[in-house]
Length: 374
Image (cartoon, rainbow, N blue to C red; front, side, top):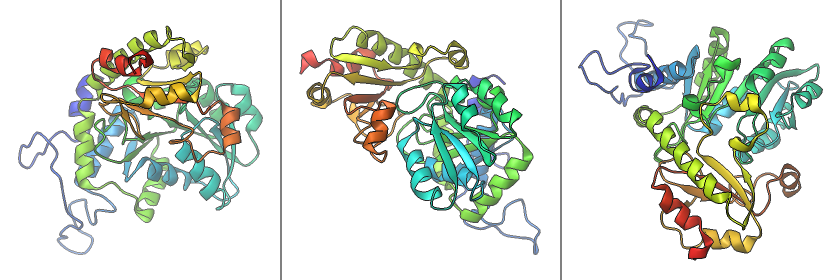
């Protein structure tokens, strides 16, 4: 099936027992066994649940992977992937990552002995220079959060393969509709499914897709052992959200391009961060469209505060990827956990604004960004 059909009919399509066109919500913790060890594929819902399994199959299909895994949050998914490594192992990370990823690596896993290096992965030489004898993986975001820097997945995959490293890609911003990391050489793909995959700001979830049976066995052991699983109700809601992913992403992208065109004409905007402006044409070619996330710097905090005041269509809030337009200040919100000096070095300024473009009428979004109306 092509993608627009796969989001609706991929994974487990409906329910063969009743003819329901939707996978039921199997709201159960345990399952009847005919005799010890003899069951119908399920024993306990931490280990496996039919609704969650349908979601996991669906995301594996959409990402062209071997197997999918659903977790209680994006951070639970990221943390579980990091648990696949041992103390004294070393991982290379994109320097401009989501603040929660930075925090869990630098504050939690460092204490457990996991070594790390943050570097600008847009330049392949930085990755090659960061490789150590104990390096086990490369972890990238592309585009990055919040500065929208691109990394060429194919190039990094070659470096990873040549050095026997795993390549992990956070694909939250792009979704499998716009970018397919596994097809480009990645070994694991991560999603904060809270965002575009859910799409309606009504659930918290994380997804991981792996490309081999060996990685699937390792990650399932961790998922089952640690237990950070997604419940059946949220699994059902996430399947429902994914069904409209294609049409939503098209509208997100259309609106974003209109807003970009408007921002380019505004004197109060000093810099726009958006994949369209990235100089790496090969990295740009790996995406179907540029996505619905925009970051831009303004001249001063007074202008920033003016934009944030008296909002009606746009919502000042954490998160992204919903049908509604969300606006945030990374330095004080999503990336506040990153030390100020590090933020300055990366370019995450105090006057940076991040916009998650929704699917409202683009004219209404632009009207609220226009400081001449306030």
